[in-house]
Length: 300
Image 1 (cartoon, rainbow, N blue to C red):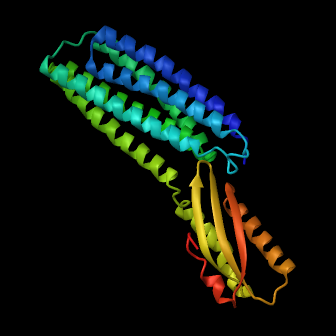
Image 2 (image 1 turned 90 degrees about the horizontal axis):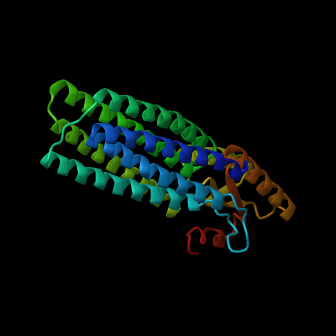
Image 3 (image 1 turned 90 degrees about the vertical axis):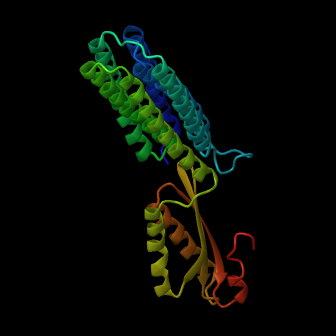
């Protein structure tokens, strides 16, 4: 696998983007007093915390395996994305409370054109950084970077909603529209928090590898039947950027240890080629022995 430490610079890029957009959006709120722009600024504050969380997770995950963590440290990325999901949920709650308060006590919005310009600039910054994080996160199988990128894209969509709300107030003169849009933003952010939390939970409970990768593993194993070799007890799980695959190979009892070992090595090599992030474990058993079929369960 590629050097995970090289991913840290992308986390720092996210930190820089969050700081810049916080300054821009806060300035927009102070000028316009728009609750929509305030909700945008609060979301960017969450972006900053999330970026530092992702940075810490990537730094820990880049550490090599040790005696206490023989399988590496990359699963910490699920904790990072889970923490980010929780922060997003808190931001949604804060925005909803502020929007309801403003609905009950409406305030005028000033200098709309200036506020719209600031929000647009911040959105473009987030859009550019989000696309970089998503591309690198998917290419390098980093859920921490990908979650951070998705979070920034949420911020982009949020800003688009705010722009619509502020523009609607400018056209109609009906000030509650600003708060209604902010409430819609809160619902959208809460939904994305649910998605991130769900994915993090699935990773922490050892979810199987994606269906496409499972198909690639079967494409390696199924042709073995032509050699009189079967398999069972195939298990897969994700752990951050790495996945683990184990399988029992059922060989003819007449094969030598060397022949069985050579086949197992070839199978492991071919699976790693099909799923580059995989760590593969094989176990050889004689197909004629009934005991070979009594150990398929997780708890033998």
